[in-house]
Image (tube, rainbow, N blue to C red; front, side, top):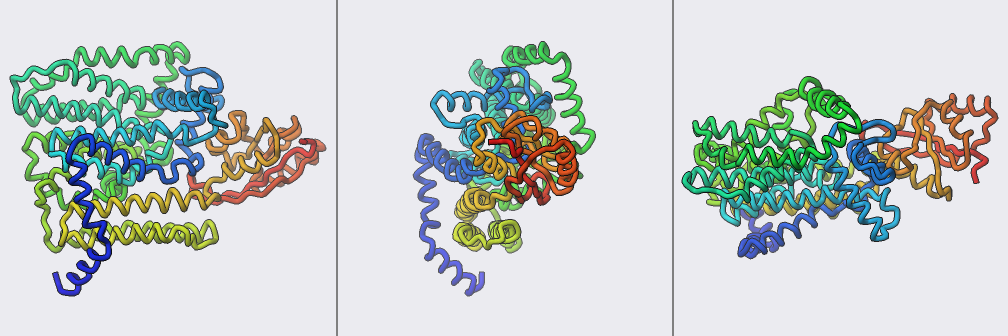
Length: 578
């Protein structure tokens, strides 16, 4: 390293003393499992809570899940799953029950407007994300020492994708929780068999395994079974032996899984006939395999490309660790982790429908593989590898530019309040990059993790709450609330029919054309119509034809992030309304 770079590095290390103490904090946390778990919980809360309570419902998946749960609470029907009048049979009932339990508890505790408070519906995702991080630590202990297990768990906690899922009221964080629990048990059974085949295992671990699988099935159907089945198949082929599978207690375990999941499946079949299985398996699962469902198709390689964003900051070390992982591929631990990762990853790449969160249950395997290589401190520091760590700085730089651009483009404001947090992310990203050659991968990775926290604050706690135009449904709901109506009814033209609108203004929200909106206003008091510019002429003509007296309440302009398009709506109400 040349003199100028050395000087810059030394100055940087002196100007940020906290960086030098990060390893000491890690040393303290690895003194016991209790300390390690406490540190992980604290880090998760710091990483996941920014924006958790402030961000309005996000279209479209989160709002759909939350609205379906809200209708369960409103109707008292906890078997059937509906979004307004349409059945919603794409996923089983698990996440809806968890969300409903939180909302009902909040109501019992006197939380005002609990049914329309979106962060309550996010609580299972937050708990699932934190639980998944803790279970990553536990699962990693089967492969590596405590320090490396802690680093693997911190990699998951700081990853961009898990940070997103922890803030969304949907299935994926909880699915990750069940998947890591199942794979952690499976790893212990497999490694115990490899090291001591004569050891007879009891029922405790198989019961946990199959209970976790049952939870995953109730959350997202049979997907979780694919992870276990492909891992078991790959390991058995590699070892040329199937004997270890008997220690999973597959027959009794599968029977236990059926006992846990069958009651609801019987209930939903009694309620819907074969409609649930037709939609969940035929219309949803199989159509994702053969076509790009809902315009989410992408070619193979999509997840590999996206990995360098969604698993940041840990992804920066993935390429550096790959050669050593490959050398260790025949070792039992690395073999299990690769069997967990590779077959399912290939399946996801081949399947036509692709969404970023599909591969999330595979990320713990990557985190443990990387942490296992870090453990002996043996990552190479060749020139090209050192240059590769620039990703720790590039990602925060891109985010900082995007945040400022977003404020200027959407908010017509430079967003100066976000600058200190974005700058902090840049500084820690810079240190992660420039200190790699001197301080090593572990300390650089920890700097990247701190940068990830500041990115979360910048985007979720500052940018999103300060750009209300990104959430038109929230603007509409606030405007209607100002009217003073106790039970407002809303109709919107087809140009804006997002699920978040239904969640925020009422299950009875209607979607129609301009003429239909005029007819709707004419049917009662406290009725509101949301009219886009293309439908406004049709609305006015029909209103004049039927003698409707109406008034313009407000014009709302925003940006629909679900379709990437600006939205403008006029809010009309009947003049007869009080």
